Amino acid sequence: MARRTLSFILLASAIAVTGIVPRFSPAAANAAEIDFLSDDFYDYDDVSREAGDPLEPLNRVIFRFNDKMYIHVMEPVASVYAAAVPLDLRECIFNFFRNLEEPVRFLNALLQGRFGDSGEVLTRFLINSTLGIYGLGDAATRVFDVPPVEATLGETLAVWGVGDGAYLVVPFYGSSTIRDFTAVVGEGFGEPYYAWTDNYYYMGTVYAGKETNKLSMHLGEYEELKSVLFDPYVSFRNAYFQYRSKVRGQSRSVPDNAE
Amino acid sequence: MFHPGNILFSFIFFFLLWLPGGSGAVHAAKVPDPTEQLRPYVDKVVEILTDPEFKGEEACIKRREKVMELAQERFDFNEMSRRVLGPQWRSLSGDEQDYFVGLFTTLLEHVYIGKIEDYTDQKVAFRDQRVKNDRAQVETDIIDKNVVIPVSYIMLLKDGQWLVYDIIVEGVSLVRNYMEQFREIIRKDGYPSLLKRMEEKIQELQKSIGKPCPTDLSVDQGTS
Image (cartoon, rainbow over all chains, first blue to last red; front, side, top):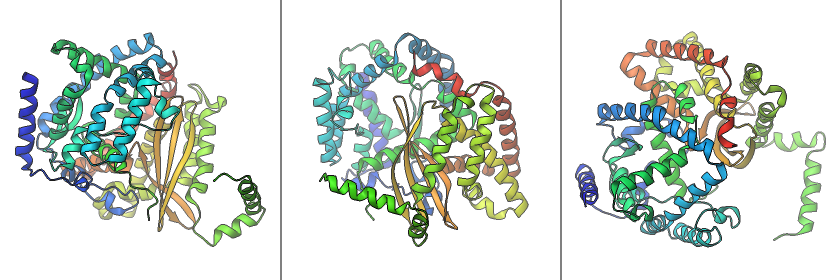
């Protein structure tokens, strides 16, 4: 119940902050249409274009906290895990969780009016749940050439006119915005692996397990990246928005050679 | 759609194009193909990175030098520096600009090589290209074991040569990422302080070069 209340409050505040009128417009979500070949791409101020960062002082504190947690707790745990569990098995676990998320992805693609993509998600779910043996293998990509499709609730809210609110760094989670993180919490209701239990402690364990598994495949990348940055906070904020527009730009499946 | 005759025809056509003298004549009239210019460079880099002679700790510095030598031919570090500094660039004198280009090039050496030398058994697949006037984007995938990293090269045509001025790794533009970091530093502490921080950062990175290369540190994570 508390979870429900929390996510309602977050959603309500996101709406209050942005003052939205729900209006379906797929183009709105893609406001930051990216063309690397255009000089405009190098012109605009990333953060102010997508979402401001009025919470910067607080965000920086959480960023430092996450940084310490990552280096001193999460990564050591993931290293031990990586040494104990073979890579193939870790990939199966990753696939398993990803497959369980497909129904939510399907719904989001549908709500965004991306009917082709939603069909692909459904196809992937059906193939991987059966031939992929409960989603442990990704037969859809490997055998049938149906690659993963991304569709999140955050994107759905964007399509329906909900603004970002503000950039947000979330403890144990990382970069997000008020809208997108609200959506992540909301999506939690739809993920079957959180529905296995009512106990927050176990939910936390499932999340930690899932993330540790994912992290075990990216060890050492964070430190290496950080070593060449001047202001990791600014760099990660910038990368978050850039990466997000890339994922969303792709999902709009505009043919690249359309000119 | 498949027709054996088509294949034969393409072969003959391809062969004719590549006869001595033929290739130049056909391409000179039109805009050169960005992928065709980038491919030999990328192939050479992969060759160096996977060459057993250049593996291991001692070879690390030698390997970096080799790769940078190659990069100098295909990358336009001047153009990169101009873009990354934005409006600040215009307020600098020629000497100051040159000095910045030097610092930024050394920095990129660490960023770029640090990134690519992580992947020990890598292959590079050329996926697609897009040309718009004198700009081109060549999309590649770095494939290493089970990891696929999309890397795009953004290029500008100068005197018949396509030169890289930005690299997009997983959708994130390197130039724009540094641009925002630099802009914040200039805004808060001024341009001289940016130079100071770049010099310090480079010193710090140079020191870590003597230590084992990132490649040697990360070998155990994939295979166990």
